Image 1 (tube, rainbow, N blue to C red):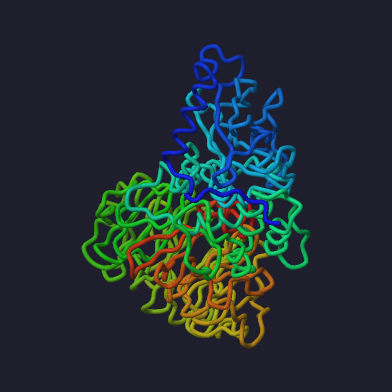
Image 2 (cartoon, helix red, strand yellow):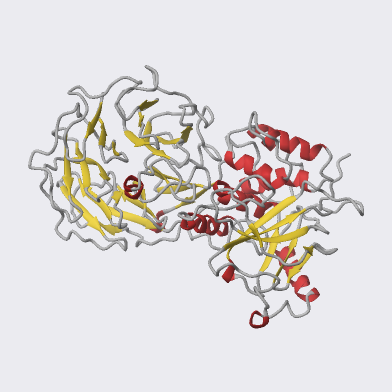
Length: 621
């Protein structure tokens, strides 16, 4: 029997705010005032399984762990807190914040989701990410719902481990990435009302509300059951990746879905009831369950082509129109004027951009052969532009661990090198040889400081002093053909995106991929490549999709690539980058947008030059 009690109407903002008001009345004066709180500020909220309240659920306030990714979180409450007969709970300051900046979140476990008295659902686990502990106030009200659960798990997926929300942490060197991931939650969902979108979503940004609600509806079928019936079994069987242990609770089920967005998509979609508790929902199964946020021109985006991410997680774009740069925070807040930061040169476009260890940004004018430097606030440092060094229609740019800037010249088949102060290190002819020929924007620097460049039919390698290390014909094989971009993994292997295949070479230049390269995963007209912190390879395709491969060259994305909500939504067709929260960012030159695939990849060290300096390419911070 299907033991679900659903109202005819979905949970609304009005009903949730009314519930919040009721809870205020039940709690007398709204909890202990902050000035008299014995440890932490009081806060309160409610737990709903779809519309029905969950009674008797155990509430825990956790602080994110600091012993590594997926490490055990710290329970903060000093006494047991459960939801009452209306699903409400009150925390009266019975906790101590480890620090004001410690990231905290609420988890609700078990309880009765509106069934017969005495019937609890042991598989029920829901959560809401709150943010810095010091921001909690007596006025803080949290509605824990399926939507807050989906949004929180997706944003924090790369920091979580199985365990119903009890395992969430980061390394000591990536507190910034964790903080940014918590901030993303407030773009996706309003934790005060329990519905999407979030209160901090910037103007002009778009959240896939229908997809969020559909994912929440998939969970609701299990949450509103007794946990032992077929609803939870069907969810857990569909969510688990092949060969893995099935989840035992709904938080872990969402985690499996977030980390494997191309798995059993149609089967999972089929678990949504005919009367989903949150509206609107998707009318059909999507291509995949990636969750994306799209940002528009308010951040200075004008034909964005390339992406670079600084040490704070801010996202920069090199725009093809108007010789300008865009910039927004990791949460999508515009940090550049609407027209972008002007590069100070009159002609040419900054096809690619790069950021140094001090978070300065470097761009160039291809047609006027000028190198331009910006401080992190967008101020032009190179007032007249840096010239010389053999610059001859540059297309690609990279910064090494010493903050020297390297550019690959399309005309003349040479490399130019400049110091961090803009002084040319190469002579008027640049560095040449090593099979370098007809290169565009494919340039990368490995952990040893060697410079790799993808030419039209060969891969070239140069030492940090500009001496060619590859043979005169370059490195070939491995399916290399008309490559466009490349990246380096933790083993020093070089990954090259060809138009419709992926090539891999050892650091000695030996091809690892077969004669046709790695194929599949929806690769089509690849434009750019990024290596995440787990060594996975991400590519932006010219058909507005994204492809993902494992470090063994096995496609992870579906046969059509990741498309999110489908071709009409689109992801990106140009630059791609991964940040320290595990978000994948993709630029769309065609639509003038940048899209964030939330929590989809292994976090990386940013900026890329810092990863080079620390020899942490393709590794987590």
